[in-house]
Amino acid sequence: EGNAMNALPGFVSTLGRKPLLALAAAIASVAVPGALAAVDSSAGSTATERPAIPGDAQQPIDRHVSWLGGWAAVEGLQDLVLSGTLEVSGLSGSLTLRARRDGQSLLEYDLGVIAGAEAETGESGWERNASGQIEPMAAEKVSRLRRENGRACLSHLRGEGVAVTLAGPFEREGSAGTLLRFDYPDGDRFELLVDPQSGESTWSRTLTDGRETWSRLSGFREIQGLRFATRQESFAEH
Image (cartoon, rainbow, N blue to C red):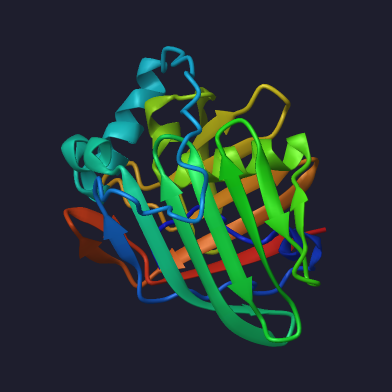
């Protein structure tokens, strides 16, 4: 699993505080044509403003990017494929995410008793429900997928579509560091807990429609010049 930043099917967010996700065997690709053959390739990317990042926030971002592999590696990330095992609420199965930096993504999961897919095709999206039917995706869900796709491609670190601030010192289960805050226009938020010296980050938090979810990454390895995790555990807080 690569650092997909909470690339979870929508139903997962309704569960309580327990490990929700374990992924493995990530494959990261750079500028691979046709990586999203199942997604409408005619849709274009949406231009996004890049607000200025305050200097006190830019410094830990630069340290974190250096820890990930450097700005050149981050900017070179165009296509991303993550595949592995999903474990949630006593069920286990497969999950695959295909994301492109131009704003298209396809998430497929199969837990045996429940399976589905969620796709973003630029300005719109579709989903395949448990009955195998293809349905148009609601606008707010398309927006959520677009944000998750952007985080998978690390666009939040460039300030794309977010207001970036430094929230200050923070500690989570023995991990102390600086909390980087990424605020979206509708009030949703993503945060990274970054070690101010090394730039390492193992904990992140998302706030979506008032729901708080913490995610912990572990088992890091380098793939094509970028550091990825081989395991992600997510905890929904109530």
